Image 1: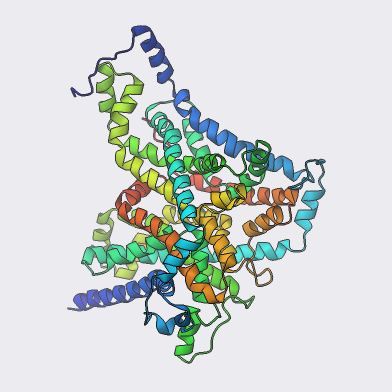
Image 2: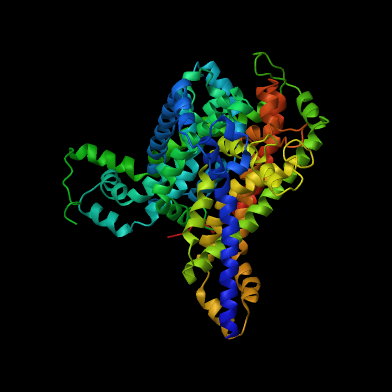
Length: 280
Length: 309
């Protein structure tokens, strides 16, 4: 009997904690939505108009129409998608090698990769800015994508290696006996079978690229090259207290694609992360 | 197996070459080496070199000197910056670790008991994690703002409680940035803790139950010791992430009021790209690098060794 009351009490406390946490995590985002749906007058009502009396989508229309926002969105998507692709091209062969070959210094180079992952982009941006400047690559999307790729490769290699590790070696061996060379093993067996891992690494890289601020902020100066992260930063600089609802709408437009991409592949991403580098 | 057994259609000679070429690991790893070499290793070495110069971002000429190091390290602002960084990083690590563990434990308990809302909570925490740093700063500014639209203060006003100067009081602002960072980062700890909790052998709990251990005894004498490695690794990862964070602070407080929330990464950013002081920024970059690498080495020594097959 007392055991059951204990469980009941535990459930009640779980629910209470879950509710508090839910408010903490979801509250800020719902307030952003609430602000984005308000007209000018309701903005000043603060939390009292949490659910606006006159919800309007005018703010979204204004943001998407007047400013550079569609261009920012397109640039953000382009840079993030290209870097996702580039990361896969660079990291997949290495993941295969790290999984299937035995060679000296393998453990050390895997560790080395992880160390690079821990270096702040800020540290490398200082010299990179100078090089890009000298090479005439400032204000090119090429430079930005290359840096994104470099930033994404270490983690991607680790995650993809653990995916390849999950494919039985006997498949490779059987194929080799049947006359496949390593390239065709990689192409015909490893790639198709690691599709879920590849998808999750791609989406992780794309979301990271979408969130990037520092790299494009430093390497790009022309407004029509800016991706969304820098776009909302600049947009914020132009807003005042009386146009806060526009900033909210802009912010929401920047946030939603990342959330949708993440949610649609949530299971894959978490699976890759927990079986990969994060595992203690 | 039949779809795999495909005849190679290239002539035998090139096949031998391909086999030899593809049979060595180096060609496969080459792209990673090139990319990391050009975009990571070289810049990092250059940061070290630049910190021994008096280079600026605009001038081309530079001399080798130790003056920049002395200047940067003896700057009267540095202690304040390091203090702000310590509060921000220390608070984030403690907050995210405890909250992440609490959420993970609750989610696992909820899943076991079939409680409503477990998945919703997990998903919501993860969504906060995906929000770009700049956007996170803007969102929290709307919550903390002392203007009429600020969410927290308008709630306090509705409740007839005195409002708080979340962002304009130098004593309060560091806590505000801390809260916003905990909001964004907790999901990461939750994922790590969730995975670690799942991998605990259930027979340990059965044994504890047989011995009559209460729920809290089970937590402190079974769960926590089993999580030790995961907690340590997680703390180091969060520390490095937080040391490097500045985009969320730029939009939330811009480092102010005064310098109350100017953490080292934001300071480096301002020195290099607002003051054009490349060498000074490089010195502090090296300092950040040393902090991160020191932590990374601790982290590496706790990872399981690469399995030998």
